[in-house]
Length: 371
Image (cartoon, rainbow, N blue to C red):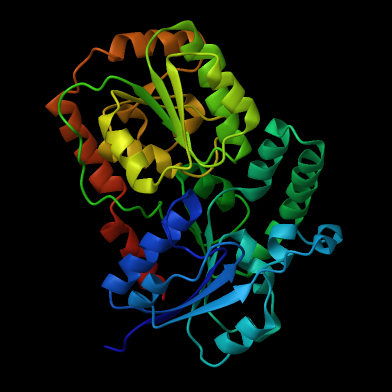
């Protein structure tokens, strides 16, 4: 049988795999490689170094400087889209007729290029992007960024209509699949790719709670502040907040409480260790978008998991979490679970659901058939 080949256009260099979007891309590349697919990877570069490890999984890796000039803020197209265009990339892709996987709406500048009209074009959606940016605008403190996110949301909503040109849309969550299916044909649910092949939960009881995430992102900053000000300021149980680039507001809030500690800019390996050691992984969000890979990390490797409804709505993993929405409910749940050992029966239930619904091996078969 002829070996399958695929172009992948990535919005960032997908290694190190240390935040949501690139985690999905990197482990998708690994899964495709394991299936024997020859991958031609095109990366837009803006701050992350070229990664030699990608050459282990790809036939060829190409890098293009993202065009970060502020003049693109005035363009009618979304800034995140127009800054990821490259004629050099298109010329490379035109040398053959392999299918093209566009990673996120961010990478779809060339989706309507007439030169690609006869190609199989697959778009992986990571969010309903205009909803995501609208929510970022709501929680943003900076006036400039608030305006930027609001305008970007409107542009993304208009630009999304280009998805009609895709042969297939791969939505990352059940909720996104339902939403995109209202507007487009050939929408498939292909859930997030991730590094976890088995459930590995430590026995015993931990002595702290953990919130982790990229703290530079407005929604994560908001969730961390909520936990500090509305939950752990009112109890004596320890909370560790771990993640990249915390805001001054969060640093100041944490400094007021002896039971709350901030671990800033630590490695992925250190965060993974904290997830395993924690008695409770507590992960509220105020954005019901996509699927949160930090939640999968907590469920595959951590003990008790407390979330709010937006974190798990229509994910199929609601039964694996303790769902509480108000600060009072979360306080009660933390107090109840902090001294409750994690049972082997609960571990088995996690294995049953996670290895069925979030198996990279099962997931990749859906994509493999399309190329």
